[in-house]
Structures are given as C-alpha cells and as structure tokens.
Amino acid sequence: MPPMIQLMLVDDQRLMRDGLRTLLELEEDFEVVGEAENGQQALDLYERLQPDVVMMDIRMPLMDGVEATRHLHEQWPEAQVIILTTFDDDEYVFEGLRAGARGYLLKAVSSAELAEAIRTVAAGGALIDPSVTRKVVAEFARMAPSTRPTQQELVEPLSDRELDVLRLLAEGFTNKEIAQRLFLAEGTVKNYVTSILGKIGARDRTQAALRARELGLL
Image (cartoon, rainbow, N blue to C red):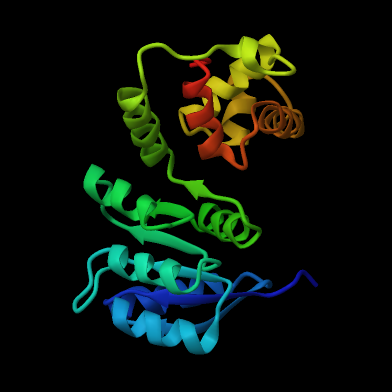
C-alpha cells in the first residue's frame, strides 16, 4: 500500500466539499481528515490536524483563500497548499502563488489530473494548471530584463530534443501530450524532463519554464 496522503478541504460550498471528498477518497492513498468553509476555519483546523495537502478555494467569507494561504505559510512554512478554483484571473493567479501555493488548478480539471497534482505537491513538487502556467511564464517574460543570459551559462547544454521538450513543457503540456506531439514514448519524455530539470537547476516544471525564460531558451 502506498503511504496515505492526508487532505484538508477548504471551500464555502458544502456540495463542492462533499463532491471532492467522495472523488478523492476513491484513491487508495488519499484520506480527507478535515473540512473548513472559510480561511479562518482552515487555520484553526490546520493547527490541529497538520494535513499533508490543503485544497484551498479562493473566494470565501471571513477570510479568502489567498489570505489563508499566506497565513498558513507564515505560521507553518512546510504547509502544502493547492488552490482549486473556478477563477484564472491574473490577480488571483499571482497573488495565490506569491502567498505560497504549490499548486493552482481550475475546477474543470479531471479527477486523474487532480490526483496527480496532489501526489506531486505532497512529494514536495509543484503543479499548476496549463493555462495558468502560460500566464506565469508570460508575466516573467514581461518583467525580465531585455538582455538575458544564454544556454552557454549551463555546465551541460540542452540537446535539440531536450529543447523541444522544454518548449512544450513551458506551454503547460503534460508528458503524455508532449509524447504525442514529438512522437516519443511517455517514459522517454519523463526521462527528458528529469534531465532538463537537472541541467537548468529547476525543482519542478513551473520553475523550469521560468528558468528557461531567464536563460533565453524560450
């Protein structure tokens, strides 16, 4: 049996929490240990439960998801928060990530994608909805200085195929989608992604996209 991942659901809609609980507990390694209907309740519950991952809505009464995420990280820097929302407005995206969220997903996400995101974040990684990733990369490109370093700064340059994978990764495509576009096996793409992260010094896919922009690779 895989290790259990303890989850806390934070959403002001009871129906949404019930649906998420039912969906998530179909996974053998997920356990929903608590629910909150606003950010203040989430802070109180987190202190008592210390869950592995918090699923956080954005718009809630008393304290919204961004503010709750910020307070969580101030008090418990190890807190792993995934924002799950219907909103992909730039303001929410950047405020949520600045507050310390490790994931940002839209509620249109599939159950398989949601499960993958939870496992990724629980393991210390980050996973952001493809449409949101593109916003983050675009904003970074806008803010970055016009003169950028190049791939020559890398100890080991990326191969042409790794650059192809990196470009698609930065657009928010999954390994499966990249494999289909480049006519590669999904396992091969996974190996390329691992190599890319190592070469450019990135922890996860989102950081890889930002680092690639910084290096002038995109």
